Amino acid sequence: MHVKKVLLMALLSAVLVAPSARADWFVSPLIGVNFGGDTNDESRKPPMGVSLGYMGAGVIGFETTFLYTPQFFNDSDLIGDNNVMSWMGNLIVGAPIGDERQIRPYVSGGVGVLRSRIGGDADDLFDISRNDFGVNAGVGVMGFFTPNVGLRGDVRYFRSLSDDDQGEGVDLDFGSFDFWQATAGIAFRF
Image (cartoon, rainbow, N blue to C red; front, side):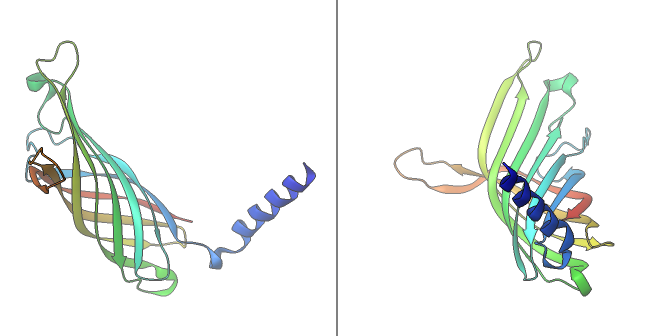
């Protein structure tokens, strides 16, 4: 038991004392706006979510992003409760600029799940939900004003993928569901 405490204290000390040897993991709560494609311009409920990723001293990194948009398609009074959820795994390519990688413009793209839902409550006329594979691609920038805290913003295009040939094998093609999304948030680097 004593050995476990010593090892835990040593690990905690190494993480807190050696910031120059840190890994550049980041977590970023996000809020934004959807536009274009299948979005409804009247409701404008903001997507909200979080991104977790890694960008080291090199130019290649990765992230996973979860975003949820309530009332994506229309006001709930018309078609019932509705939403879109995206969970994507992305490759990031971005060149660090400045000392301690203070600014990093990047391009990003990846695959994941797009889940859309309309209705489902007892009073709703519809009860439709759909899970699709999806892709996204975009550009953005992260800027840090301290070694561990900064801001982030990006614009991405999302598109569903579909397998129209229900026979043997997988024949993925671009689906009909698409939209653009701009997000911004605080970035915490550790």
